[in-house]
Image 1 (spheres, rainbow, N blue to C red):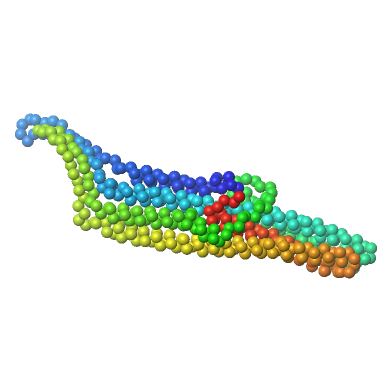
Image 2 (cartoon, rainbow, N blue to C red; image 1 turned 90 degrees about the horizontal axis):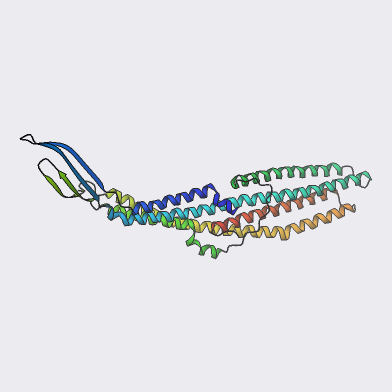
Length: 372
């Protein structure tokens, strides 16, 4: 399971996004290439027969990128942090999804085994009823009743096997392997509310939102610095018919119509939006963790009660009625009803345990921890 998470296509795609974002840092640090301009032509004197080839060479280096370089690098770094945290959050979500499939398949397997054991017990009870009727110790009407109960249990077994096969197939599809059997996993450790709240600042989703806000602020700073007029320095050499010239050149942008006001307003509004979204994400994660902690505690309590209180009573009732039936002091309907109650209690134990493991495991994974 752990190795499969690293090979999951969703996780590998997120790692590719991180590498792509890291390339933006190199791009922000790299200065623009100088521009070289070459000219060639044929020069003819206005008077006289003189003529010759004329040519010129000029090189220019833009300097306006220096004003934007710092904020652009900061924005690129923040974007890498954002994508990295999003990758960590996605990995936790993938782990929780695979954990859910794993737990579902394991408890579906356990439910099939429970129903198969019940089928054997009801089958033994059916044979006992038939023998009692054959020797005159029971009423003939008891045979069809217990046989109907046996068929009902067999239908439940068939349905449970179908659910198990579907759950195992889903797990196998994501693991990329053929699975023959899934064992019930250990119960996930308990996560306290205080511990989960203390880790909130380090939650990947919160850190991704904060990094997104940092990148937006850096982009707003870049937009403001883009108001600085673009400057280009360069030099040239020119060989003409009657002269040679060498010198420098300076080009300055004239911002007559565009002072980048629209771009600045858009970038500043985007920064404010990102900051608000970061606060909203923190609140959403806080609420989600609180709900997950409550769900884990609730399902854990239900599972403990089902196993410690309800199941033992159902087992005692079923055993007592079966002994009473064997002594001829109870009817088959009472035994069948006790058997149904016992089967329902056993299935409730598995259902509550499955919900407990899914909820507590998801909380453990989504809070940024690894299952032991």
